[in-house]
Length: 80
Image 1: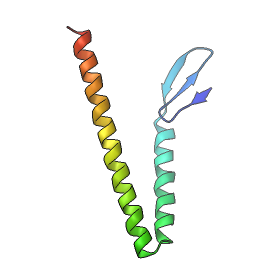
Image 2 (image 1 turned 30 degrees about the vertical axis):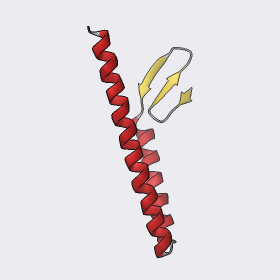
Image 3 (image 1 turned 90 degrees about the horizontal axis):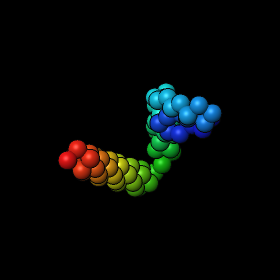
Image 4 (image 1 turned 90 degrees about the vertical axis):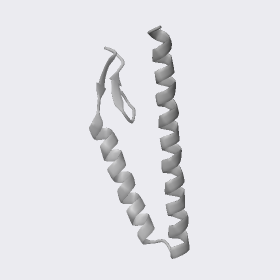
């Protein structure tokens, strides 16, 4: 079985199942690690880390918007 961030696939049957626990667990671990890290940073390092997180969040949002736009355009072409 291969496990990705969003689903797990069993290759013998080709059956795919959504596994929200895997994703949520990873998010919780990442948040805990970030919290532990920021507690040990100096003020300047903390400011840089927060700037990094803001940039990463903005980048992820832009990626999701672009992906949604591509899906919409593909669906529009399919249903013409």
